[in-house]
Image (cartoon, rainbow, N blue to C red):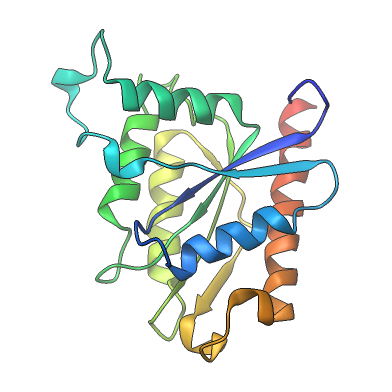
Length: 187
């Protein structure tokens, strides 16, 4: 928790596109967060080198330190991910790999993590959700299973996320569930 007792949630977006639907989901989640919850988007996943144990030694690359510190300072992590070729985007998998180290004590270890996303596929990224959840769990994160938003992009019918009230409410609820999971860790 930070000094003003707000729950801090950091969002990792698995799409690098500036105008991606998943980035939009993350932004809408941040704007519509319940009272007492701060949601911030992490910028810079594309700057991380590919995970390589040979460079995961002092001095650790600066971008890796920045990511690890950002996740370490958050009470929880929310991942908004598309589905690339039926699975998790490489940039997101790479970030999870960096966060899993050092083994057993990585920044994501025991941290509540929620996964949601949107994809062109008819199931709205269910495969990516499952693969991301599995990877996070193996990396040591505590996946919050009650967060399951798989949005087929066609459901938006070309409208911005903000114009679809039921999606905005689902995002608000996902953030509330994730924030509640942080209280369980503290108890």
